[in-house]
Amino acid sequence: MRRGRSLRRVAAVTVTLLSTLFAVAATASAQPAPAPPPGPFAIDARGALVNLKPSGTTAGGIGVPESSLPSLGLGVDLGAHWYVLRSRKISLGVGASVLVSRGRETPTDEEGQPTGPTLETRFITIAPQVSLNFGTARGWSYLSGGLGQSVYDTRLAETPVDNARKVRTVNYGGGARWFAKPHLAFALDLRFYAVDAQEATASLVATDRATLLVFSLGVAFK
Image 1 (cartoon, rainbow, N blue to C red):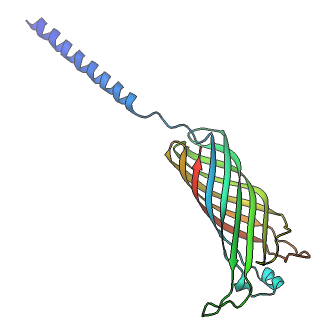
Image 2 (cartoon, rainbow, N blue to C red; image 1 turned 135 degrees about the vertical axis):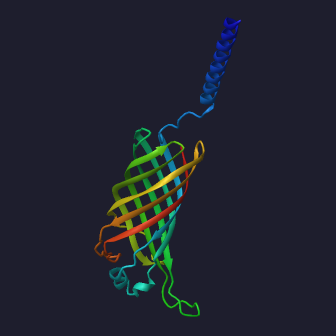
Image 3 (cartoon, rainbow, N blue to C red; image 1 turned 120 degrees about the vertical axis):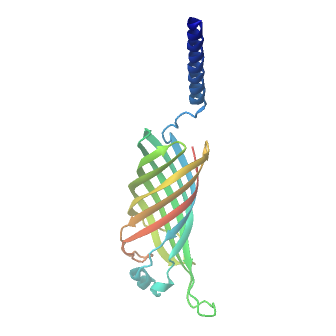
């Protein structure tokens, strides 16, 4: 009798252990697999807000007060990045972004009547970047920087845009992408552009060295 009871107890314990093991295995298999590293590529399309830097040198060259120059610009920021070294801790990416922006300002009096000409500042840049990325393919943040070229000038709005100066520009900043869907993400970027000073030409006034802050917001695809 005792032997029979012992066998039944062993059988009961065995069934319990097997049931527990099967339950654990089923739970583990039901959990999502670990997310892969960022990438392998990302394409950004964002609207941009540019903090322009009115310059007394530029204003003097045009013959207007510095307060008449545009201080804010709107634009479009497009980029593409490829992640050449990928891991779940840190990934290395290379790519570039293209920003096209303009700002306009018309000085007015207290009644809103124009008191001077409309001025336009444009900032157009191609910004190669090397990035360090932290996170997974479901969402990651990054720090990046690089050296490129820009067009940064201010002129009367009615002046034909038939020439441009390209100037060396260093860019650095960071941002993030959050993928609500497998291939579509919410994306933002905060970036500084250090633009070298420019001498006056026959048709363009001089500009001081300036560091422009650009905040861009939009979507990313992968």
